[in-house]
Image (cartoon, rainbow, N blue to C red; front, side, top):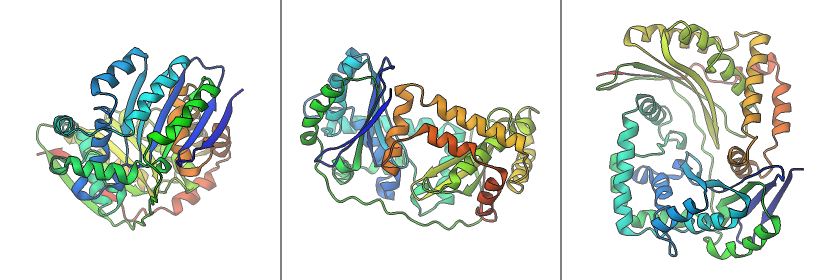
Length: 405
C-alpha cells in the first residue's frame, strides 16, 4: 500500500515521502524554488550555472569524489534547471538511498571554488553555443524573450554569452545565499525505502542546509500585445514558425481544458495538425504545447518545414488558432485519453514520479494525486473547453519565424 507523508523540519525544509513497498528502487531529489524567473538581466543564466557548480565540489567532497561516489552506488543521477526550479535528483536501489542522499545534501552548499568556476564557465558557454545551433530551441528562446519582454516568463534559462561571461563567483555566492535556504527547498523521496533509517538521517539535515530566511516569489501580471518578428540564421535548411498565446498559470483550473485542447490540435500522433501537416509531408515537425507557470502560461503553436512550405504551414497554424473551438466530441475524448495515459505512465516508477511530487508540493503544498487529476480530466466536456478558450487573448499573439539568412 502506498503511503504519503509530509515532515516539516525545524530548518523549514519540507520533506515529502511516498512509500511504495512494491517498488524495487527509490528516487530522491532536492527541489529548489530558484530558476530563471528569479534572475535579472545582468546575471541571466546564473541558476543553471549554479546547478553545474553544485557538482564541482563541496567543503567535504571534490568534483571527482561526487562523480565516483555516485558511480559506486549505481545511481542514475542528474539535475536540471527550469524557469522556476533547480532540481538535483536520482534513483538508486533502496539500500543505497542514505549514502546517495548524503551526496545530494552536500551539494546544496557547493564550495564555488574560483578555479572550478572559471573552468565551468567555459563549459556553459559551449552549451549555449550548442543550443544556438539548434534552430527550434533558439527560436523559442528568442520568441519568449520578445513576447514576454520585461516579464519573468520570458527569461532565458541558459542566459547569453554576454551575461554568463560577466558573472563572477561573488555574484553566484550572493545568489546562492539569497535562494538556497531550507524553507525554499523541498526534499522528495519516492519508492521503496527504510522509513526509520531515513528519519534518523533527516535529524542531521537541518545543520547542513542554509538557515531559513524570508523569501518571496511575487507574481507579476502580464498584458500581451500583438507582436510579429522574423529572425534569421545562417546555415539552417528549414523554416521555423512559432505562434504564442498568453496562457494561464498553474493555479488556474482552465489548465486542464487547455491541455486537452493542445492535444486535440497538436499532439504528435493523430491530432488535427498531424493529419494536415505531418501526414501530408508539408512539415517535418509540428506541435502545440500548453505550459503553465507560477504567474502565467504559454500556449505554443510550432511547425518546421521547407522554405517553400512555410507559408502553407503558417496558414494552417493560423486557421486553427482562429477556430480553436472547431472540434467534435470524438476528438476531445481521444485527446483526454492520451493526456490521462501520459499522466498515468509518468507515475509508474519512482524515478518518473519524483518530479511531479516535488514540483506539485512547491506549488500546492499537497500530494500530487494522480487519481484525482484523472477524474478531473474525465469530467471535461466541450462546453468547458470552449469557456476556457473564450478567456484567451487571441487578438494579441506573438507571430515568429526563423529563416535562413
